Image (spheres, rainbow, N blue to C red):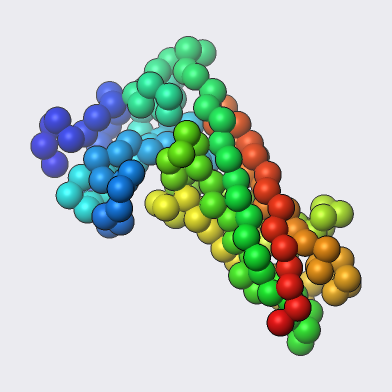
Length: 172
């Protein structure tokens, strides 16, 4: 990978996977939603995992590594969608969420899906497009509880605020 494409001041790894070729990802440097010292870079469709130098974190606002006590805290947004109730076994299929920051995708964010009264249904991590989904089967709650809807929550990390969204569950 050319030096000008590396971005930031962290150590670069060899290409670790594919980046989707969509607006907002190619050439982007995106924070890892679960580790403040890690970020991703995309170059010619290849994803590069990077780590900031020891004692620094990825600053999503300035798009560079910064001292942990100097980095900006960036707000995130979470949107949850519609999922379907299953009866045998009782559960929900297609719980889903999209996590973004400043209109950009947030990869690597751990999202917890729960009933409105707080019973955890499942947990999943976002991909490069900031989306995630999971199914919850054989749950120990009632169908009425599930049909009230669900929450999807990203707890945040030191440089990214947490966010929550509410989704609908419909009978299938």
